[in-house]
Length: 119
Image 1 (cartoon, one colour):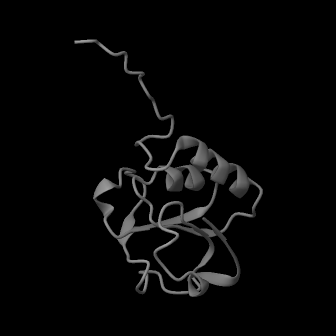
Image 2 (spheres, one colour; image 1 turned 180 degrees about the horizontal axis):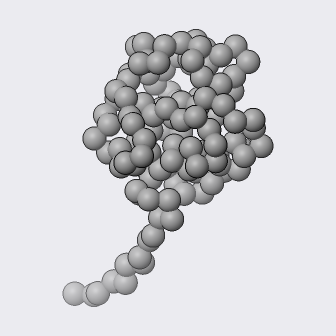
Image 3 (cartoon, one colour; image 1 turned 135 degrees about the vertical axis):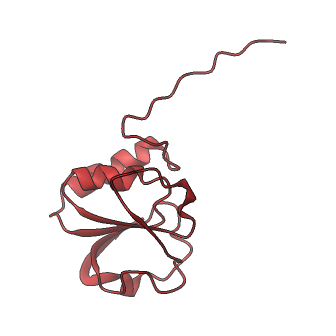
């Protein structure tokens, strides 16, 4: 049997993200140019991206249909389904970040009329 060398991967921001690290870095770079405000990360997955954005000064809320993977102790995750009402209600956020669940819901009423959606 051939022994394979498995590279050691370390995530500098805590838990292992579901999305690729370079995807998170791109979102962080985009959001760094935006004024700070209320942000919803849905589905938040492990919460790695939400934690990075919180540390940048955004007021972050996390939501996921299955919060069992959420791993950031300083943040709270709420249960929510993209096809139903979310816990915080409509028009509650300046920004909505949705990396993996973009094909699952209706987005218009989720952000304020002048808000932004990053998918």
